[in-house]
Image (cartoon, rainbow, N blue to C red; front, side):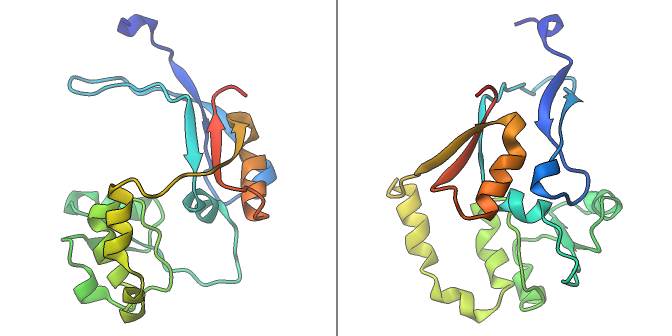
Length: 177
């Protein structure tokens, strides 16, 4: 496909601030220019996880201190300007200096950083058999049960279903339903 045939925008569920599920915005956003060494991937479906729910929810009864990590010092100003209260330079060993300081952790990076992130909770987390869970995942022992499939425009409904505990499995959003 030539670059002139690429669409200029895409539909996306985007939240600029905490919102209730029934007012979750879906809008057209610009598609960034594809540069040398990059690829543009057309997404037809996406699984929803609790991280989307937690980052969207409004909970004013809880005091929050949001710290964000990056492996690059140059990301600090960007992270702070986007709302984080603090910046932690991630050297894959941040648990040694920050253990026990957090009551909740949202890990969006992946398994490479997971071990160090869970150390931030303190000693009790090690009751979870992490090595076995990772091995079982690598060997394909986990089966994903798809609960509901909804269209992207129904993202608010998907969040509501997830909050009510009625998903019955993994929530999937598709481009057209």
